[in-house]
Length: 312
Image (cartoon, rainbow, N blue to C red; front, side, top):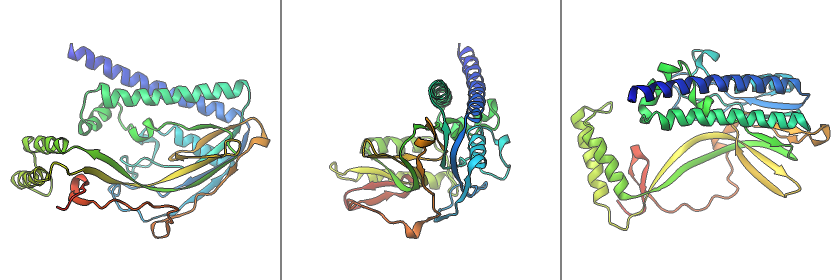
């Protein structure tokens, strides 16, 4: 029974990846068939193998315009496999290409393009569902599973949805520094540490015994907390490019993550939005418009980014 399910899963995986590639190819042809109104994308320095976790304090941006920008955007959308990029590049860090391409499309073309991009995004979501949920595999085992059956798939690129907008008034670009903050229960952390202890594994550079001792100390420090203690996971996320979408009629600005070019559909040239620039990133020059005072927290377990609101 399990073998049959496994066979079905692998068959679904191949079918979905093939359907995604076909749908992206069709989307590309449809975009090329429409008049290009304006395009502006920003290439960022590539992340080489072994440098995925380096701290990023500066990012030099290179701007590309017009048809060159459109062609870069289309190549970027269709880049699903390692074979589509240089061997020197990291496969653990997705290539980012912020920006926007604005295409003239009205009536039937607008409907057809919207439907096609919706289909692409459905295949992307389905692929992620198969790999992360239906496979039943823990995250550390997924890499091997994916590369055994879809050699060279860059899952970060494959999962990433394509953003489609109906012409806003302006589209400007910037950078966002964020933290992932999640409230956690003491019992959850204790269960996680106990599971780590019972797995009886080592983690470099420690021996198995040293690692067990380290986890035991972490466990005792969590158990020693008062019942009223509030725990948070507060993990920094690497700086990411964002797009700020402004619609004058709604007097509303929306902020979107922008790892890939936004596709903007315009009825005609009168609807072309103002496209801003993405400036070089420099961590020392970031200005926060409003930075609320953070509540005082103490770092309890650095490797888990676990903070507590009481003295340690």
